[in-house]
Image 1: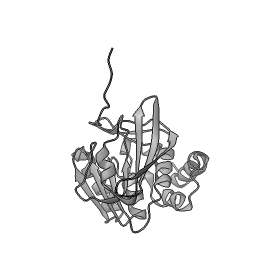
Image 2: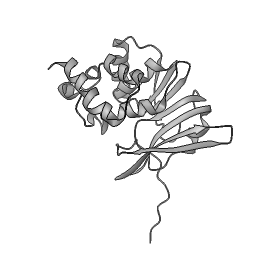
Image 3: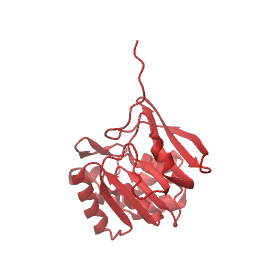
Length: 217
C-alpha cells in the first residue's frame, strides 16, 4: 500500500470536504503518520472513514472527526492541553505539535502504555500520560487552556468547566445517539462561560461517563 498517496487522498477527499481548511491542521495530518498509531491489523485501513477498534471496547475516531475537532480547538503554542481518552495516541501526537504541554488521561493502562511507546518513537516529549477514570473531570494539573474529550458524554461534568483558565476552551461531544452535538465552551471570566453548538456527530461514549437524570413514567 502506498501510504503517502492514501494520506493525500484522506486529506483531499475526507478532511477538506468537512470544512477543515486550517493550514496548520492540514499540515499536521500530513506530517504525523496516522498509520503508525493504528493497531497492526488495521494498518492498511488507517485512512479509511471509520472508527478503528483499539481493543477493550475502545475506538480510534474517524479521521475527519479528529481533524475537525482539532481545528475547532485552535490550540496555540503557549497553551497547556488536557486530553480525556488517550486511545491510540494519535490525537495526543497532533495536540503535542501545537501546544506547549499535553496531559492525556486514559482509563485503560494497556492503551496508555502502547500510546507512550508510539509517542516516544516519534520523539514527542511534551506529553504526560496518566492512567485513571477522568470522565467526571481531571484537575491534577489544572487550570488548563484547552480540554478535549475524545469520547462522547450524555452529560458534561461541570468539573471540566471549572478546570479551565480564563479564555480557555473545552470541546466535548454531548448527548445520546442518534443525536449528539459538538459543544465548545469558552471561559469568559471566573464566573461566565460561553457555549457554542458547532456541529452534530455520533462517536462512542467515554467509559463511566456521567448520566443525566432520566424520568420514568
